[in-house]
Image (cartoon, rainbow, N blue to C red):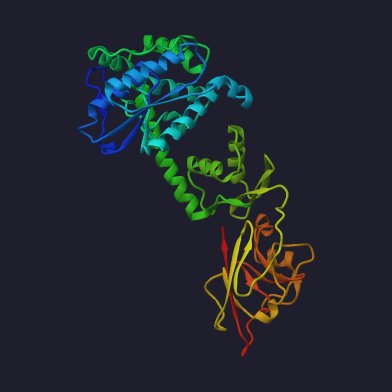
Length: 442
C-alpha cells in the first residue's frame, strides 16, 4: 500500500480482491475521475468476475448537463456497460427544502444512486474519489474543528459505497486517460472558488504544495492514521459502554466506577447524550464527571446529572407513561420501557434474578404495570410500611432512575419494584399458587 503514496504513476489499478464477483453501480458524472473509474473497472471486469452498471445523475443545474448525459451514454456503449440516467430539478428541490444547492445536490444524488442500486441489485456503488479529493476532504473537516473521525476523511468502504481510487493521485488518473485516448467532460463550476471544496482545491492546496510538494500524499497518510486510531478508540469506547452504560431509552447513563482515559470518556459522553454536543459542552460534561454530584443542562430538554457512580442523561420533565393492566398469564407491554412476561409457576422464591419474581397471584388481582406516582407505598419483606420514595433511598436507587423504574401496583400499593424487591403482601403463601413475572427492558 505504501506505493500508492508515491509520485503519480501510470500503474493505478486498484485492489479488486474485496469486490471479486460483485455487482457494482458506477457513479458516472462524465468528468475525468469517473471516466477513469469506469474504464478501470471495465478492464478488470472479466478477471474479477464483476457485473458492472453505470448511473448518471443530471442535476438540472447547468445548461450543458444534457450533453454530459449523452457523453456518458456513449461512453458506456463503448465500454459495454449498461447505462442508467435520471434528471433531477435540484434548484427547485433545494428551494423547497431550504437547503444550500450543494448539499441538496449531494443528498438527492445519493438518494437516486441508491434507487438505481436497488433496481440493478448492486452490492456497492463505486465512487471515483481519489487522493487529491481525500486531501481536500480532510482539510475541510479540520477547518470545521473535527476530531479523529473527520480527520480520517473518506473510507475505501463505507456501507454500500466503495472508493477504490483513494490511493491514486489525480495526475495519475489523467495520465491513464491520455494513454488510452479517453476524453471526458469539464465542469466549469469546478474552476470557481464559490464553495469550501473548490477554494481548497484552487487556492489552499497549491499554496501548501509550494512549501510541502508532497503535502497531498502526506495528508492521505495522516487520514489513514487517523482512521486507524479512530477505529481503536471506537472499539475501546464500545467495550467501556458494554461494561457500564446504557445509551437508549428515556434514561441513559455512563458508569464511572472506574474512570476511563479521557479520549474514551469523551466519546462515551457523546454516544450517551441525546442530540448534538458542542466542544464546550463536552468539556463541561467531562468536568462534571470529576465531581461527586452535580447537574448540567445540555439543551434540547435533556439534563446531565452526576450521582453515585454514574453520569445520567435524563429528560427535564419525567416521561408520561400510561399504566397498563397486568396480565397474569401472557405478555404486558409497558411502552416504551419494556414488557412483563407472566406465567404460572412452582411456588419457589426467585433469589438469583432481580428481573424475575415468583409472587402470590391473589395479591395481584387488579394490578397494573406503571411507573411511580405521588403517594405510592410499599411494605417490603421484613420491614414496615413506608413511602416508595423512602424505599428508593434505602435501596440506593439513583434519583434519575426512579421515574423510569417499572412497578407492579394495585392502587397506591406497590407489590414489585422491578429489579429491587417485592412486598410482603405479594410474597408466596404455602399451599397457594404462584405466578412468575419476568421484566424485559427494551
